[in-house]
Image 1 (tube, one colour):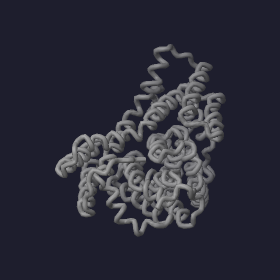
Image 2 (cartoon, rainbow, N blue to C red; image 1 turned 120 degrees about the vertical axis):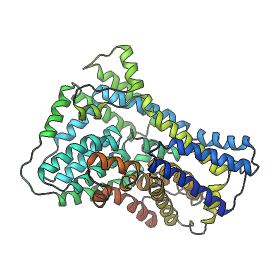
Image 3 (cartoon, helix red, strand yellow; image 1 turned 180 degrees about the vertical axis):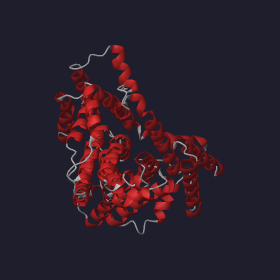
Image 4 (spheres, rainbow, N blue to C red; image 1 turned 90 degrees about the vertical axis):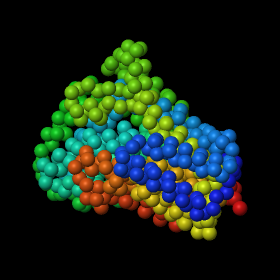
Length: 464
């Protein structure tokens, strides 16, 4: 993805020191000061520029490296804007509220943990946000678990597993779009390829949760009932609201480009919304840009349904541009290539390079606590080694999600770990052993790497 001019060749020691400074700067900023990742990335960029100037690299070349890095993510920017619009349109049409309502309908006290896992997975896919799913649906399930006298740690593990399955496999998820964009892989091709590791992890997790579920015959399901009633009262739950979901699936099966799929689906959702609500032109444009705002008075419902809009994607867009700009500098100054060259002797097999990429993504999550950076930095670092072995880009994009996206909630000091502990009231270390899907995903991606199963190799692209 990144084709930069070689402006400088640092020693391995210099490269390691610079990487350690960047990791240290980000770790302290994110974990100690709870800073947005943008600020430490910008500081890292300034540090790399200073280093480059000290090494007598012309600023014009450094600037060109940053621009080339950011340029590689421009296709994602357009997709992100469309995703923001689609989420707002799906709220307006009732697609997301209807999916949530359907999810609630299948909840029973039998196989409780398995049902929690499935429902959070459905809702997670519908809204493309693991944290929103956990903060709304998850909190309700924790309350029900208390009424059932069920294990809160197991319940939290099922919530986290389901929410991050949904986040990982949703075309609305920012991490899914970042991973596919990083590797220049079509969004739906990326999702289809992830299914090879994600579906087995889902099935195994479901079985374990079903076996572990408590044996009870009755429970207090008032919290779920109240949320269902509140959803009905929004006048957004309709059978026809599910049409965009089926259309999305058909377009994905037909391998129609993500850009056209999202644009058409947004228009379809807006048309369907006219059956139950006719907004004014001003209201419609306001919702598409700023997002749908729910005003039911029910805090859980309003938190779940207030989302979307082009403006909601600005955080992700700015983060991607900054991170890719930093990546451009890391390549222009030969920092990442020199480290990979030092590892070249052990990165000569498909299994070893996939394992190295997976552990790098996990390592970034542990050291920095940021899932976006685990995807972006690992993607930039391992694209060349994957290409050298003739591996298709979708192999790496899958590893980035299997070992990057779903590992973040398992780190106590990570962004997701801290958030989930606060909203669920269960410590990260308590739910970690029971987050079966999140634990299985990196394990399966490594196993498949060594066995060669589901790995796509482009023999024509093997490089010397």
